[in-house]
Image 1 (cartoon, one colour):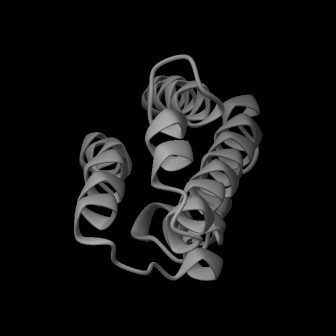
Image 2 (cartoon, rainbow, N blue to C red; image 1 turned 180 degrees about the vertical axis):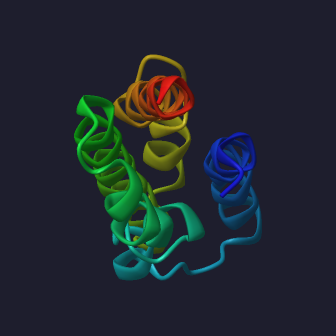
Length: 118
């Protein structure tokens, strides 16, 4: 798993949400909210658990990733409800989504460092 690529894929959710707002598209909020539906989540719940489950950073990474997906689901639900103003506000800086995104990025970085240290 390329963790840097995984971080980028999650950051791209803001662009996907903005596109959905501008095109008034409906999103699969239930799927977005499940942290096992993306490649990073599948890796975290599978191979990473076997390899790194003993590391202190693993549990933090797992929790941060799940929290990010819960916040992303909330934004998707705003978009689906056609609350585009609310969805735009949720995509701003210093919102729960941006805070969870930052926490997840930090947690992935720590897992990467701890895994490399052995």
